[in-house]
Amino acid sequence: MTEIRRRPGDGTGGLRTGTATFESLREQAVALRREGLSRRDIRDRLAVHNNDILNRLLEGEPPPEWTKRPNAKDDLRARARELRLQGMTYDQIQVELGCSKSSISLWVRDLPKPDRRRTTEEASAIAKRGWERTLDLREKDRRETKQIARDAIGAMTERELFLLGVGLYWAEGGKDKPYARREKVQFVNSDPDMIFTFLAWLGLLGIEPEHLCYSVMIHENANVTAAEQFWANLVGVDVNRLQKTTLKRHNPKTSRKNTGADYHGCLAVRVRQGADLYRRIEGWWCGIVGAASHFDPRNRT
Image 1 (cartoon, rainbow, N blue to C red):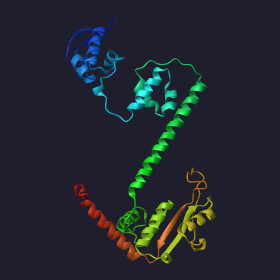
Image 2: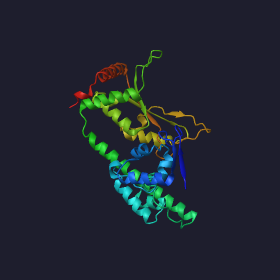
Image 3: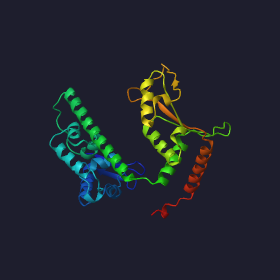
Image 4: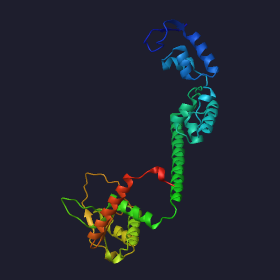
């Protein structure tokens, strides 16, 4: 017969002294659980503050419904428990439901373990299929979330594009420094969509295409010719209009990730005689910062 001795401050009670058998405490704990008490209530009622002992006292006793939080995965949890009772392993349940094994473990850990009936190789193959299924579901969720967000943008007003362009330039464009005056408008980026949006903003400002200069910046061991043609096609100019390409020396001691056919380096877009435009951009940005400092979300309609 197991005895649990409680002493003040020993972690197993703290409010009582004396000796109680594990069996008698379990009977009380189970009875309280079936009355609908939560773990915290049972812990306080029996003065058992050791989580390991409390887990043993309540082993096999499901929590009352009122303690369960509504969860979008409740159906998955119920299905996982059903499959576990049919003798499936975590890997098999993962293949079936596409859930992570950590979630499955939380849902079914109180259920009996099935007998092991497969080799290590078979278990590894099942685990791989389960992980692939999980990745497929994650990718589906990722695409759906991005599409919903994209649809939420809709059409942009001229003012929205104007403000976006100011923020875009101040984040990614060249900026003047007190110790090195560079009042010129130059935007460098490797993302074609960023370049496209920046050019749309310049168009909104009335900057004529002939006032723009383009040049490519790329690693010397990449396909420079293909990159130059890619950027020329993107901005809609003849490749001969591009200025001299800047080649970055390759360091053989480093391992580059930006390689392959999708690597095109960066495109630099410069506005000729852009000092006045640069000053206006800086002023616009200061105006945005000032407006943001007084922004009150309660005034949103």
